[in-house]
Image (cartoon, rainbow, N blue to C red; front, side, top):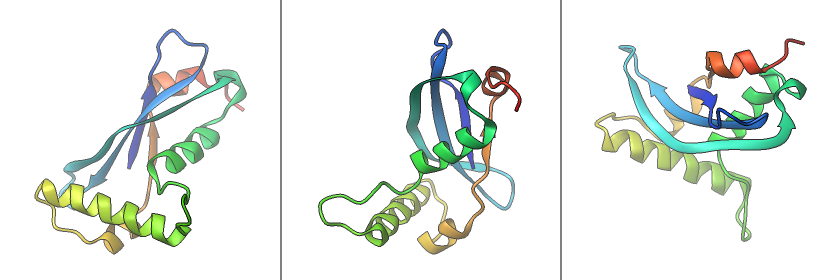
Length: 118
């Protein structure tokens, strides 16, 4: 699950932060990534909920391949890294299980208020 909020309150252009968490069976959440976000010179009125959700998933997901690495390598490293972060917080989970979890993107009320309904 990733929570998206407005990062620059004064900006007319898109600027958001993203907090990626795993929700456990008992409803508690474990922070996996808190250093992500993105921006665009595009104004809020020119985007949609679906656009923001899609971009957010890409920003917190596996990076694009570089230096001869394959997409599969990048995905394996990404999920192994998230597994390690969860385990450092006492959550025993394997990378494959994390990968299978649904990835909901939750937009804050501030984000929703800035998007013009389509």
